[in-house]
Amino acid sequence: MKVIKSKNISAFGGINLVFNQLNLLGLPDLLKENLPELPAYNKRDEIEREFDVLKNDFGWNKLPCSYLNQNTVYLPFTSMCKNIYHYLIHLFSQKHQYLQPHYRLKKFIFRFICVPAKWIYRSRQWHLKLFGNHKFVT
Image 1 (cartoon, helix red, strand yellow):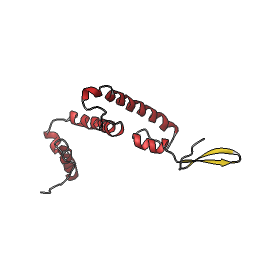
Image 2: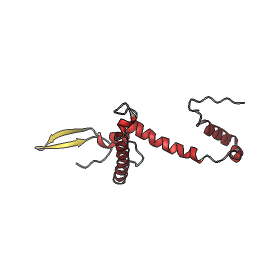
Image 3: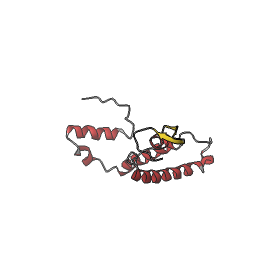
Image 4: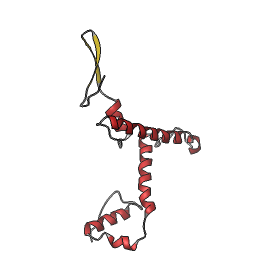
């Protein structure tokens, strides 16, 4: 028997590893016929991804107050900010080809907001020269 070592195996992640190994062996329906459906497990993955975005991009990993009842305004406010951000990135991605609607906040900031620039005095006027591969209009 082959022993598989992985740091990603947890109490919930182990069943996906078993399904993947059975798919590699060509026996994908062996466990699916004998086990009931796991719809809650599949939904859990989507929710974890949302909490990962809130935790890493919108400051849920370091809350401003020590107790959860003191953060009752902060948590819903940052989740509303996430929804507004997704709406804005969707609008910007339709106008600019180098932005995608699935970009996370840090990638959006480094691609769209933090652009290296330099003021240049040319022909008795100040011009802003933007650097990068994108065609910005100033």
